[in-house]
Length: 269
Image 1 (cartoon, rainbow, N blue to C red):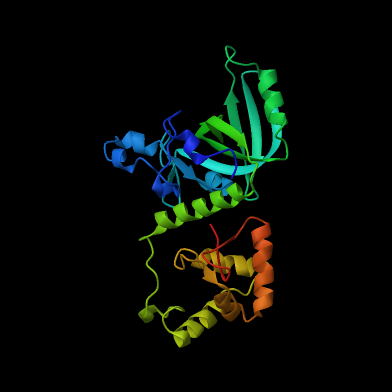
Image 2 (image 1 turned 30 degrees about the vertical axis):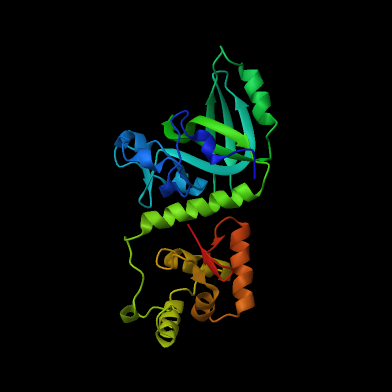
């Protein structure tokens, strides 16, 4: 694995890892004694799209998206731009779902803006792991109090996305129950599932075939928490399995979909 470890944040800088965020925690016994404010200071694995979609109910409140509170967050992406503003270095990072600015404040007693700029320019067009707090700066979202580390093992990218998916699904658990036999679930009764898929197909007639596949994934990812089966896409759109997989793979390459718990199911955040 990479030299960057999620456990690097344990006990330092206000960061910690929690099982809710999809990470392991070796100090669960002491978590019961933590105050609520301390519990909230935990890294939540996200995609940049989730960050950009997050909203505040009132000014200065915590950001929230799809039932997930975003305070201290982590994400992975590629460094696309580095800008020196004297007091800060602004690093623009994108992950295929969107882009965001990460602000690194300069302490003259420790380093200079030029040194920090050179440090992050060396990471241009490389994958990095970012941990920090989501804030508004000049009415724009940015990540502050951040730590940026280069990723040297591509497995960490996959691990982060799986953690983000797990955290997202846990937050949705209970908000929508999995379909039962009475509601015509694909997983309970094959005949009922065929009827359900056929009925759903009538709603997916507009746009390109890739867009229609994406709509199916978006509409069913919450209910089908292990992932939307390829067979469901095939039945819904009346296309071949090979064609369905081709369009799903296109979405994966664009960062809009991810593999589920097996090679035959897929999910969309």
